[in-house]
Length: 167
Length: 388
Figure (tube, rainbow over the protein chains, first blue to last red):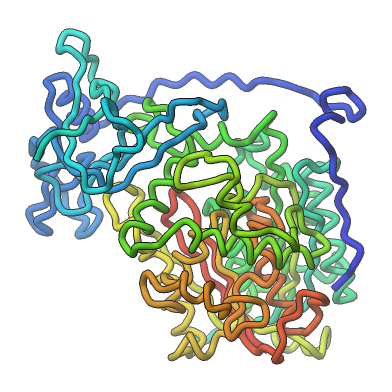
């Protein structure tokens, strides 16, 4: 193995002060994603304050978000089932960095929530709220806090967050 | 199956750095030249080129395969870029392997490149697009979320503490102090340093994570009859495996990487390995986060579920332990230019099995090693087993 490795390390400063030339640019990407069949139903459910899963009659599994093909048996899934808007915290994090790497003092609390009515270990990613970060526990029972019906637009954000409830 | 034996006959790499002066093309060329020089071949001897590189979003260049092709020596040759997220670096040698094993080519160059610094000032935001655009991205997720969520679930399921996990970061960063290409080698680092580093997304602290980096790695593969003419120390590819789990990541067991087990079983079967814990002498599992090394050792069936932390605590996975893990320094220590980091693990095994790893050399004349990577939305496993 060679002991002389190529590659030249630069510092951020050399870019900032122009010692090393750089070209800076922004890429604009505007998209309109139509929601498809299964997710379309899922989002329409949010408008009504309902979380929908889909059920495979062959595998007897209820999955969420719903989909129109079962990934286990590859048969069509056409049964959409309303799940509870309650569930259990499968796991969570206390995140002090935003998606674009800004530091925040009060953490966001992303979580995977196993929804009541879905098969075991089947949940969705969302956030927790109305709770002190140091009080969040795996296994905690939580319920969706919805936007007022008139403000819902058929989006995952129609659920503002999940909050702890008494067992 | 009738397949030809395939050997690794040469390897090279650049330094892994936070920001390289060189472009991705230039890094690819540097690593390739090192690999060719190491086995006294020239580009004229190369019949086909396999390139691995991760998301185009980092570079802001569409179709990176074409963009990097001159640096990778691909022009006028059969050439293809493969991409399976973080698993790419251990997938691209598999792609090279079947090019040769199939009988289609005798000598193939495998190049893995990543230049993450072009996404300015920080590559993190590029990762937003891995989340589902309709059901997840409106929540403004950070890439750290997914790892923090998995790490917490792993800790809770088996009663593992943050300091149990921090030992992995300490081991790998100390190992990397002996790697001349390393970005984050630190012979003095302690568990307290890791635990006291900034909390990014509890339970993940800054030193639990490998840094974004730039770098490239290349290896040369040859069919048996050619390999024996090129070198008297060929390192044979004995088994390969890859597997994909559900992309609905909130619908699976986050405490256990089933996709790694499936990939490992495929590779063990091919290599004729019945007792991996006895027959694998060096392990280079994918360690972008310290808990992932433990998670992956369990998926590779090299530790019982929830028991990998004990191997670290007992020193078994140290460089001079019974089963050295990441003697290179891994992603946590050498750096994490995604695809290049995975292929670095294969190159490390090549050097270790030829006893050319210098200060990093594992004692006891190891005969067989395993490299593994993982990626996509945390659900692809790629495994390569090599032996001498």
